[in-house]
Length: 318
Image (cartoon, rainbow, N blue to C red; front, top):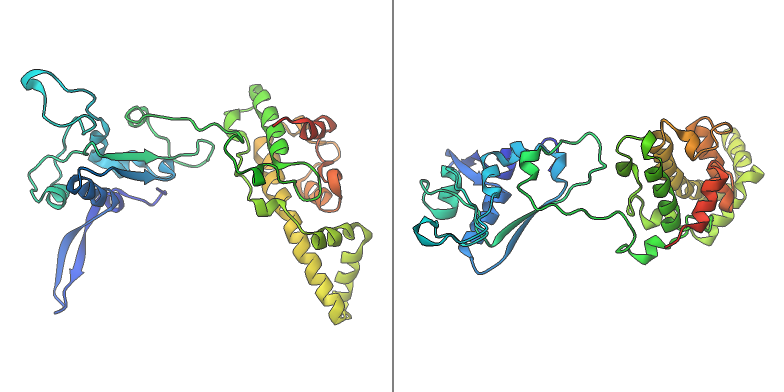
């Protein structure tokens, strides 16, 4: 789902259809919900799953419309004549929708229900901002499951990857920062949602090869600045042009982590209390923080953090 996704996209809509002779007609074109409903009804011996990724990035109750009523499922067979005859797991209530009924059953007058062999799974990231809120009436119709924010099931290659040349693993950095975020809950709104996720970064954001490390080691020696001056003056040799291009590629790689992770901590997670983790008397702007990371080496790239925070990076247990 996304903010522009609608009921018509999900259920279906009447669209123009141009025949070979040029005649235009209008007919109901099924959306993903109606299509999988037809498949599940046609093949009752098979299990079907409709997965809705980022369900809270769209206005879910509006997108579901009257289908919202179908989310209540039958949980037991009632003795006697009061049972409706449908198996457990079928929608407890039927809805009237002639377009869906005609596609699925071939009978526009038949009540529509979700069959017991069709499950709907929705995923959502509660920490995302500027997304739609799922109201209580909608949420209570789902079996909710919290996916814990830890490294138990994360690819070890990512979890144990060292952040560039710092010797600090992503797991340790993430665990230490998240511990501070949660421990600082009294001063933060929805602190749990401000934590770093295990997949906040990609493995490629953390890694660099030996050539890249070698080039970055020369940055503090003003080599890059000297080459830029020559570039402005138009006096670069072909060899120097190639070297400058390599240095810029290396800088681009080393900017990914601070621009993505440290920027998030500075601008969002600790926006109103930076003194908790940052040496904010020395570093008073994001520009200073990024530059400090770029022009340092090894563990000193984290010198914008307080000493006790850096110790936590080293000491965090798996």
